[in-house]
Every structure is written in structure tokens, then in C-alpha cells.
Image (cartoon, rainbow, N blue to C red; front, side):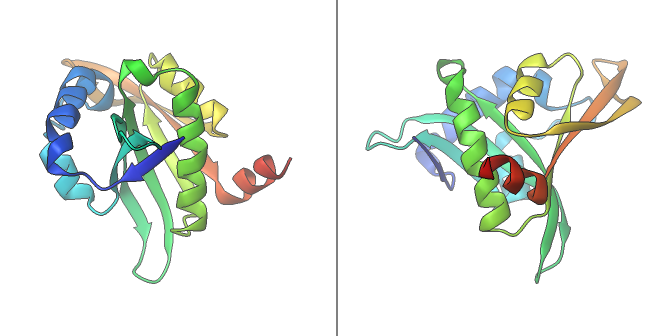
Length: 167
């Protein structure tokens, strides 16, 4: 139902538009990176999400950054994702489960975390449906639109994910 592919030139306009449209949910006052900068900084851990059919219409993007571990073993990473509104609903939930399985099984991560602004209820619901749990509230952690901004940290661990998906 969904695929994760490396970014290609034909997706750049879509990725740029999506990033610019939802930038207010993705970044704070200190990070004004472009989509090209994000792809460059996170490669090879940046993917375009498409439907798993021949059309390969882009639905969104996902990337991992702030990776901990080394060349022999990866431990943790911070996930960021963004979907076009035409794909909101069950599709992101399904993609999240597939992507996490890939993170844990293929790459060997032990922990995936997400940094979320407290008012971003849509993302928090998506994270909870994928097995993430709130670990922390960081008060006045950053600046957003010139105002102090709290940050919530959500995480999912490989061991918890495996148990949840066995049932």
C-alpha cells in the first residue's frame, strides 16, 4: 500500500511545496533549512512516500536525523514525516507501521523518537497509533515565531514494537 523511495528530481517540486506548506509544524525559528538542505543533510535516510502502485504518486516524505550509534550498529534516530492532505487518514497510520518495521528490522535501530509541538494533535494521534509513547515535555525548549515554545518527545522502542505487533 505504500513505498519508501529515495528522492528523485521529478519529486522535488512536490517535496518543496509540501515542506513550505507545513514548515510551521516542522521547524522552529533556528532551523530555516530548505527541502534540498534536509535531503542533503539526512541522506541516505530521506525517503519519498508513494502509493505502492505503478503510478508512484508522491504522498509525503519521511526522514531520520540525529542518529546515534556508529558504522557497526545504529541505536536511535529522530523521525520527521509530512503527508499531503489528500493522503491523511488511515494511509499515514499504515505507512508508519511499515516504516517502523523497516527501521527496526532492516536498519537495526533500537529506538525511534519524534519531537512534536504540543498543539500538533494530528501528528500526536499518528504517533500514538504507531505505538509511540510520550516520554517528556521540555518547557520553553525553543523559539517559534519569536515566542518560547514547549516540545514534547514521543518514542517507540524495538522491544515494545515487537510485542505490540505480535498480538
